[in-house]
Image (tube, rainbow, N blue to C red; front, side):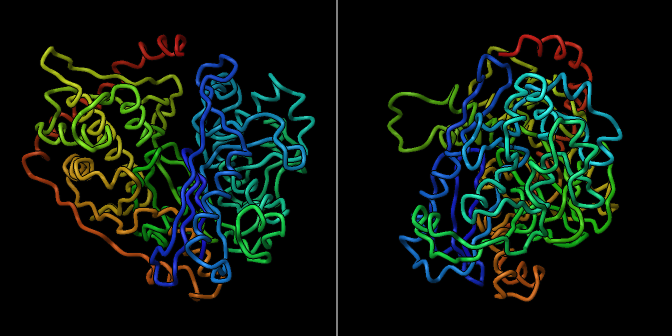
Length: 498
């Protein structure tokens, strides 16, 4: 089974066997363009780069595994990102999930009714508000667009010529009626989009088409290879982590911080957002913060060690070594990690990052540790909110994502939460979830539950350290009051954002 994970930073392609072992992989980066046309908060990518990165990553896989061995291809991807197309050509760059240009549209159009239908509280993340921004500022683009779709719909189009999207992918636009799992005419009218511009909605796990001859030439895949409807990266990460049934809860420490739990029935509330499960039925109640490993990457790129260090380590590895030597609490430095606004439970696009408690004795390592701890405080609040919503306090957390591979960060998460962290053995859990969906469609396993049991494996368990738990409990009470205290200042400062 080939899983294609087109994330915010790169496309990763991973081939899994029926036991869940990764037998080949490839990766190709994707550039993000910030501040387009002088717009504060703008984040864009070229859809053609998604395709070229996918082709490069897949070609790396088929150089290791014969194309004839690949039974299915399943796409998972960054969510809430969308592109406007004329045929397969973009009319303008795609607008990303973390783009915050549409704050005015959120204020004007966001409402309890939109939340009830779409499952998403008013926030700059869903495509709906950014499509409404286009309708106001670039109306000709929407009028000319023959197609408007998510990343999964675009890659499916390039692979198969079919204009279709899994409802666990299309839901991220915020244009879907989550009760019917089909497009909502009401929400489409609100955004200024026509239903006929949107892809057909299909069940996750359904075969949506076959690899065309042109796509085979570009990727190295065998023509006729089945392409299976997958889901957004959050939904697939949940499956890869083992959260396929009610009663389990996962935390994905990826570019964004996401936690969730599966429920069979539809419900909506401000303490989470409701998305379609990639398992083909039911829903995933998610809480999230858009500054996960994004914030670590930003910090390393902006303030990381430069020049000759005499050590063959990446900036984040050097910073982790230094931060690991510091005691819990980062010397009294506390961070609110709202670099891309605050999502669950505040839903405040004007929120901004803050670091409080500076003294002349603090170093770059203190700041780095404070950022990790600030995200961990948010993770604890997110998990507790979802656990309360599903009436299922977790005994342990199923933890995945790039951040979970940091020994320091995993320990901080355990200590801040006071809960054991069960780390997933497969580092590419999102791709593994897509692989499980593909394995079920290819009949390697009779159902997704069986596939998850056969292909998923737990790694080590990180236990909380009592002394650190006590320290973080005291600091956590202070951290919990910072947003409320700083919110008025954030609202003013947000108007000056670059």
